[in-house]
Image (cartoon, rainbow over all chains, first blue to last red; front, side):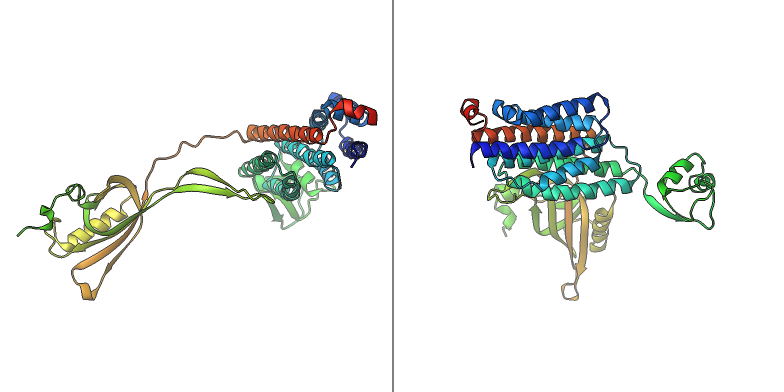
Length: 223
Length: 182
């Protein structure tokens, strides 16, 4: 593969990845504008930054800015999905895809750390989501034939798993309640928790249209 | 008449009666098992595994011991000797085990079995399994949040340097060479 073709390939990958990164809705704030500025700059001058050796850190900076500007796991999942669908042929382009996956996974770790989990079910759902990515990315990283990269990936996935496990332990479980009759949210909150001020949470969790009429089958945290 | 005890050597001179919490018994055989705890990492598409050392395996002792009728070496009668040993094996917490050759160690009795047979009247056998008592670990509390952040940072740095190396080895970062192509 010629050098020019390889530059073109990297260009296209970077353009698609950063487009996915910029597509998330929380673009407000200084870090959001900084992200747009840096991503635009990187897309416009990819070849130049590759040649001067600053490309990896500039790309990493974009990922970090996406995290600080409030990207969600769902949006980062789209970035990861996009990267897993890339089919690079050159060595450098392959490395860009493989290592961008690590960047994205590291950001997911940071987002998870900043997330306030309400119930153990939330944590379990996140764990299942991460497990799926770990399995996919593990095979891709193994292709780098780099021991340290693989070890760092394993350490990161272990740290995320450990964090989620430890976070889940003290959290209440999400339970299904069967009520005898339709009651107002305040009464249900009093009935389940012995206090009325958690009615708003019950309404939000069960997507109730009017808080005076709670459905008889409810989902609520155990404590 | 000379007894075998009259022949002296280091091993025989240091031999002591085996006991657990002071309850003495004779030893038919004993064995010790331990080693290193290892986690074997095997990587996809690599021939070289990595065995990670996770510390020493706990020491376990297996004893086949016995008590015999009209034993002059142990005080009391056979029934009181059996009672003492059963009491010692079932008592709370760890106890001191004296090994005939290797000396004292603090152990807990994990399980034991007592057996006697019609054809060997006055002879009772004990199979005893002991495990090293050790001491309570001082469990460090890990800040899992910081641990996650540092792992993320390490993975990012490693990925960035891996990307730099790949670009350099592909000849993309030698600017003088590429300037003309672009």
